[in-house]
Structures are given as C-alpha cells and as structure tokens.
Image (cartoon, rainbow, N blue to C red; front, top):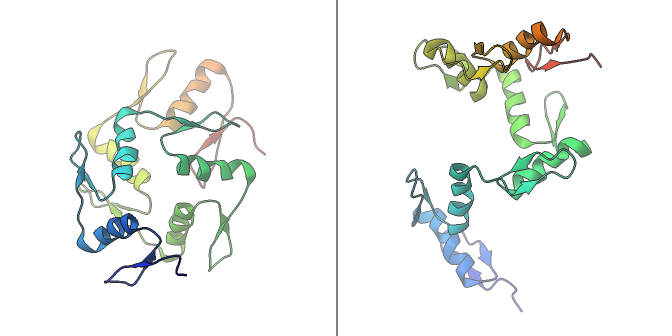
Amino acid sequence: MNEKPYSCDVCNKQFSQKYKLFIHFRTHTNEKPYSCDVCNKQFSQRDNLKRHFLTHTNERPFSCNICNKQFSQKDKLNIHFRTHTNEKHYSCDICNKQFSRKDELNVHLRSHTNERPYSCEICNKQFSQKCNLSRHFRIHTNEKPYSCDVCNKQFSQKGTLDVHIQIHTKEKLYSCGVSNSFFREIN
C-alpha cells in the first residue's frame, strides 16, 4: 500500500494527503492567496501569514528556559537553543569551522569569497552582512538610536554607547576584533 498516493504533476513529489499536494502546488504556480493586512506581503500558506504577522505585533510567545530570551517562532527558539548546547550542525567545507546555524555558515563563507552582497545606496560601500550595512547607513542619516540612561547622550552604535557607559560605571570593557562586540572580562 502506497503511503503517499498523491503525486505532483510538475515535480513528482509525493504526499500522503491531498491538501498537502494542493498547498505544495502553489510553489509551482507562485499563487499567494494570503495577504498581510499591515504590509501587504503575500503568502502561499495561512500558517506562514500567521507567523509573519507576529513581526508586526512584537508578540514573542516562545521563551528560552535557560536565558529567557523570547522568540516569535518556535523554530527560531530551537535554533537559538543550540547556543546553549553548543551543537554545531553546519561545517565550512573550506576551513572546517563549525556553526550552530546555517545563516552563520553562509556569512562565514563570504570571508573566503570576499563576497559583499549588501551595498550602501548613498556611497556604494559594500558589506558582507546586512547588519553592518544598517549600522553604516546611520553615518548618512545621523540616526542615533542608542542613548545613555544616565546623561541621555545619544549614539549611532550600541558598542559606542557601551564604551561611553564606562565613564559612569568606571568599568572597563574589552572589544572583540572579530564581532565588534564588547565584554566586561577577557576569557
């Protein structure tokens, strides 16, 4: 007895239930019948729309039981959890460095290829990571989203704020040359 009696006419992928075939078929037709009321982004599945909608509400129903960090999606929590267990499922074929998340591996691979897919629309400077482009863009906009709770001085980068806070706390912070993060002690 065939456990997957429903087969896609386009790619021959098989399914155990007819509705799953129906949903799958949308990948070929690019049909996206579900639309976000807030931003009009379209989705082929209702569940994907529901998951997307949480980005607008800031609702984060999934919480890490180790560090209490909250997530809007369960799969994001599961990926995050690997940072605590030190599981590394992804390995670089070039240098064998291992990563807990696929996106971390993809960013790392750019260090071997020198690929910089993110480009500033104002000065054309290129970046390997979107977050670095966003941080750079604040130079042009003069946006300063980080402010000191003590003196209200504003900063364009969190790291600069962290260094500034030392003036008030007399605590020395050390910077990581790789990730541009700051730490209170050197390990």
